View 1 (cartoon, rainbow, N blue to C red):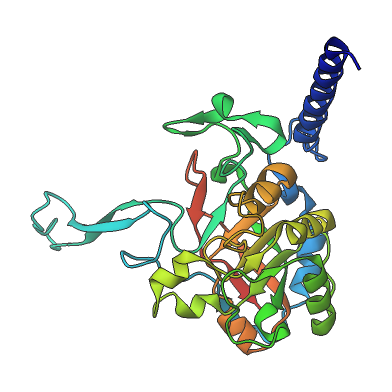
View 2: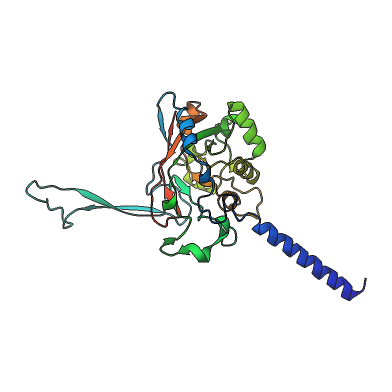
Length: 315
C-alpha cells in the first residue's frame, strides 16, 4: 500500500474509533426514565411497593442503619466534622424572661459525605457529565446544585434486602480487595432464599465496619465491595439504591487499577441508582434478617450533593 493511502486508511480508522468511543460514552443518556428526568431509579418506587414492603414487618423490631458521626469518624480526606455548642439569647447564658428559660444550640461545620450517607445523582459522573447527560457547567454552583440535589428526593420507603456476603464466603470479615459481582450476588440471594426485585434497596454485609474503630487507617485504605459487573446487574434489576457496611460501597483497590471509583459513575450517572455508604448491617446480619421494610427520610438540605443519614430497617 502506498504511504498516502496507508495514512488515509489509518486516519479513517482513527475517526471510526473516535466515533465508536463517542457513541459508547453517550449511550447511557438520555435516561430510560425520560430525557428530562432528575430522579433516576427512585421512579421505581410506588404506593403499591410501600404496601407490599409493609407486609414484611413481622416482629416490629427496628434497626438503626446509621453509624455515629463525630470528630473521630473515619472519612475520605479532607472531609471532617466539627461542632460548637452555643448558649442562646445574648451568648452569655443569661436566663430569658420571668421564668428564667435557658437553652443551648449547636453550630455544625461538616462535610455531608461523612459517616453514614446517601450519594445523590450529582455526586459523581463521567468527564463532568452526570446523570441523564447533565453537564456540571449547567447545574453545579458554589452555593449548591441547581439540579439533582438531595432536597428534591422523596422519602425512600420500600423493601430492603440484606445479602450477607461475609457469611456466604464463610469469613467474619471479607478482606480488602474482595469483589462480589453478579455471580456471587445471585448465589448469595439463592442461599438466602430471596430474589431481588424492582424498586428494592439492596444492602451488603461484609463485616468491614467492625474494624472502623479498632483500625481506622486500614478501614480507609481499602475495602471489600461491589464490582462493576455487580453494579450493572443490580441496576438492570431496577433497584433504587445499593449500600454496604463500608465507606465507598465498591471494592478497593478497584478491579481495574487504571480506573478510579468505577462503580460510582456506573450506578449514579449511568443508571440513576443511589449509593448508601457506611450502613451498619451488623445487627441485621446477626439476627439473620434478609428482607425488611426500609425507611429513609433524608434531610432536605437545599442544593446538597450528599447527606448524612440514619435509615431504619423494620422487621
